[in-house]
Image (cartoon, rainbow, N blue to C red; front, side, top):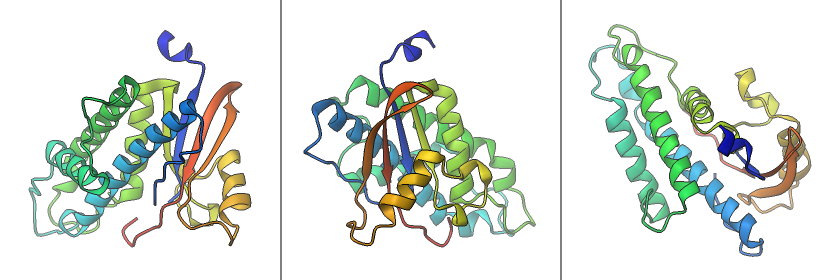
Length: 216
């Protein structure tokens, strides 16, 4: 924990709801933070997509063992990440910080799916409630427990669209949603970044717009 609290910068990455863009005009350190945030957000998006695609199977009351454990799920999420981004998740040239955070994310998603096995495989019940939004919240909670205050990944949305209060936008996110993303002149899909402070510490924050699908 000492190594984490000694960091000068905290990087907080929030997925609002699609498209991750690198901004080449940023300074070197900030550009690295954008790259880190984009990787984390894209892996989360890939995992949510995999879970969304499995909703019919998960909610099939006629099938008991779905053969969808954490190992299979993470393998498919990593494969989808590689397909979408054109690069391997953990490559030789990856910075140590990114490697650590991505591995923590993979471990978090594996644990969440494994812990849901009883519900996923429960026969005779249709809708299980294990939807992408719930999965993302549980995964992000485990991720924070693993990396402490080094990084935070969140899924949020305008308050009117949020069902679980734990996913409500914080003050900074609410301001960006209201003042930045509501601007009709803003190009659709552009990320927003800002150097700010969180709990008195310097922090780099970015918000990436994503668009809900039916199973979210």
